[in-house]
Amino acid sequence: FVSWLVLEKGMSGPGSEQGQGQGGASGPKKRLYELLEEYAAAESKGNPPQLRKVVAIQDYPTAKFGMLSIKSGDVISVLEAFDERWSFGVVNRTVGMFPIGITRPMEEGANNVQQQQPQQPQQQQPQ
Image (cartoon, rainbow, N blue to C red; front, side, top):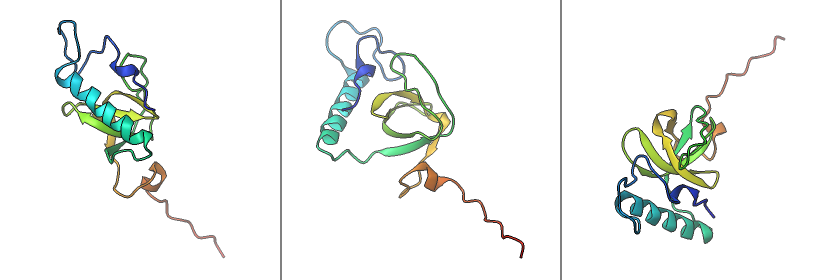
C-alpha cells in the first residue's frame, strides 16, 4: 500500500487548506485524500491507474513533512498538479509534493529510465 504519511495532521504547502478550523479535510486537501484512496484501492487490486509519469532529472533530498525526497532517475506518478511549479505524486510507494521543475515528462511506451537515455554510438574497432 502507498504511504499515507503525507496527509497526516500538519500538512501545509501548495494545495493544503491553511487556516481551516478543526474538522475533516476540505477543498484541495479533501481532493488529495480522494485521489489517494482511489489510487490505493486500484493498486491493492493489482491494477494501479494510468497516471502521467515524469522522470526526476536531479536529486531533491528533503526531510520536510509532506514532501517527496527523490533521486535523479526516479519515475514519479503524478496524482495532481497544483500549479506550474508543484505537483503531488507517488514514488517508491511514498506520496508527497515535489517541484515539477526538476522533472521531465516520461516518454510514452518507455518502461524505465534506461530506455529514455540517448544511445551512444558504438565505436568500430580498428581492423
